[in-house]
Length: 314
Image (cartoon, rainbow, N blue to C red; front, side, top):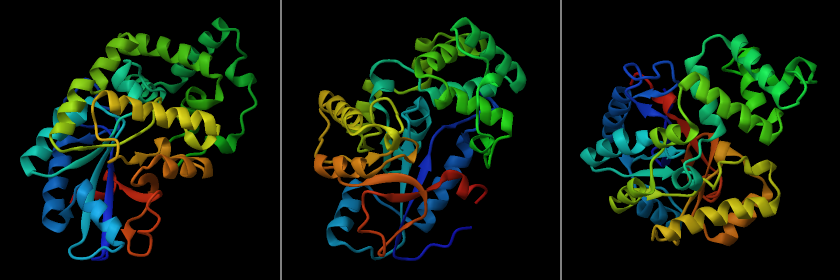
């Protein structure tokens, strides 16, 4: 168990939250909804769960005081957040911070990272997936996987074996963007028996649901437009990602003076920080592991978070 200083703010990061064991995708790496309910109960007992205005006041005072504090954050705009998380927050009269990429809500696309999650959930045989990728690479006139020069160190992972990591890295960034998108679309239709558009409607919140969450007092922040790795994008491309997400919020009549940002994949660079400061964001969230204290409170554009899995079996 993590020890928290009294003068600290813990930000907890969530992604999929659903009754996963009895779902259509029982092997998905998701937080079981009953576990989420238990966590909320424990958090209420042990922390002061604060909202956007509370955090803004702390940032203005430049000091954390009183009972140790906690913020619940939810990335990627999943339907889970509307269907399961929102009613639980309402019941407990607490607020969450939600970060949906605008295009998943607006245009019914599916993020590469999500397609990969669900393909791996449906097919245990990684060699079969690699064979399917090779067949499609041939179709799109690309060299075979095993003819590609891939640094083995790039595939080492805390969580995955080399073959699983190879599938993920190929479909995330090793293959050319157009090729990997075509391959992912093919694999989704094969393994899930769904079109990308139908899958998107099942997976993500829509604009109407997002507006309802906003009117219910939830904080909605920017997670970019297409969920790109900002740290490897040009400055102009980053500006496009950020500005287009803000335009989306304007269309929904959100107060864009009260915006925060959550870096997709936790990826950012000096250009990113320069842009978000000039744009007027109130603070920024990373995937760096840690808590906010009076020592790092001033670093408000690179706040660390903890994973929900750090609080399992409380």
